[in-house]
Image 1: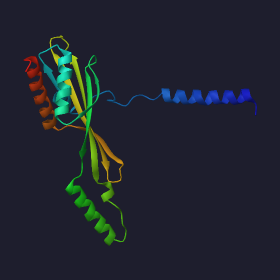
Image 2: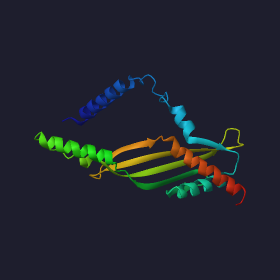
Image 3: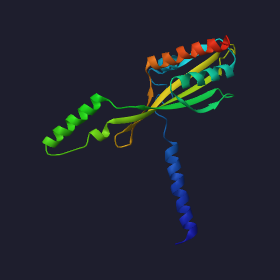
Image 4: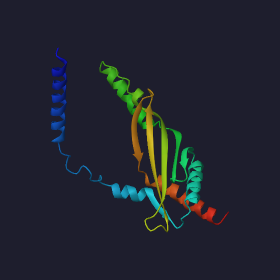
Length: 186
């Protein structure tokens, strides 16, 4: 085969593909935040009347450890703390439903192992960012909790952000107390 013709053909195909891709526009609302974004952000963020970023990061690390997390990473200059903890994810209702489905499928002549799809364990991850407010007089602290859930077959069954208000409330209540105690040198 003639090499210059081969390269010309490859160039033409690439040019055609890029031309087609370039004509595609972004879908409507592509950069629009999802519904409930503002409520989730308010749930995850608090501000504190201090400008001492090291004090905040230290208090965050202590609170996460008090809540049973193991610190994975901490960068004081960036105001970042990440931590994780292992937890049981089994649900008696989920297992009972899977056993019932297994029995019904066995009676129907086909067997499928539904109990293998039941949740077994999970890792809960916490990520905290502390940064100065826009006016520079306060510190903003934002925490997010995510979880990775494994099933009985040791496969990841889901990855999700936790949006339980009580979890965030408990974290911020403990953080407020810790910041107060550190400020009072108690």
